[in-house]
Amino acid sequence: MKLDRIIAVRNNKTVYRDGDLCMKVFNEDFSKADILNEALNQARVEETGLNIPKVKEVTVIDGKWTIVSDFINGKTLARLMEENPDKKDEYIDFLVELQLKMHSMVCPALNKLKDKMNGKISQTDLSATVRYDLHTRLESMPKHNKLCHGDFNPSNIIVAEDGTPYILDWSHATQGNASADAARTYLLFWLDGDIDGAKKYLETFCQKSGTAMQYVQKWMPIVAASQTVKGNEHEREFLHSWIDVVDYE
Image 1 (tube, rainbow, N blue to C red):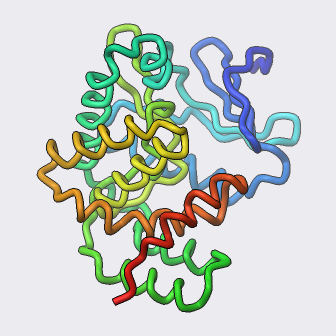
Image 2 (image 1 turned 60 degrees about the vertical axis):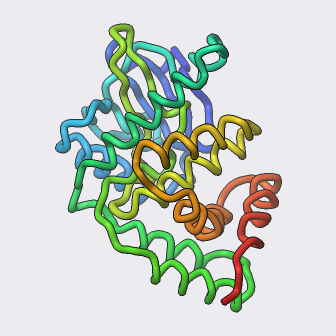
């Protein structure tokens, strides 16, 4: 395998292409358990029949754990939005349709979304009172078992040259409530500075899924809190502003 063509560089990983293969190479300090869990998530989601890159192997290259999967030739939905701003509403519609197709799937072997979020909330630096409120609110939300991505945004969708969309990056995949997944996507638009896109996305998701907007909004403080464990200072400040809208009952 050749690591000479870099596709993307992230904080703790570098993605390379070698012909029909894509290599996600993690830094030495990245959790081995998390890497193996990501590969396992991806393999489990493959079984649903969704269009995703298939895992070929998990290996070590130059002392670094690496997930090798199919390389999908195409453009991310984020790039298409940049190149064709006049088609943005059309692309958001496309994004939501793909997300709803994903939510129609079940993947029983995945971790449960509520368990993951409860764990994340416990790790935050929020006060005990706020943590208690968020745990209570999370437990009161309806239990579902839909396939949730956890980081569903235009950068994680590649549209192949024949128009087929592929969903990337299954490291955060769980089974749970689709509205929690939608709340996460909405917050990701905000974090990217695209407020209009966030509003259009939420309107489209609620209209197409028949979900009350207030229901998705009830998830936002919970989702925001679970995301404060990672991210830079600016992101944490923004996410804390969403947690502050918790109405204590």
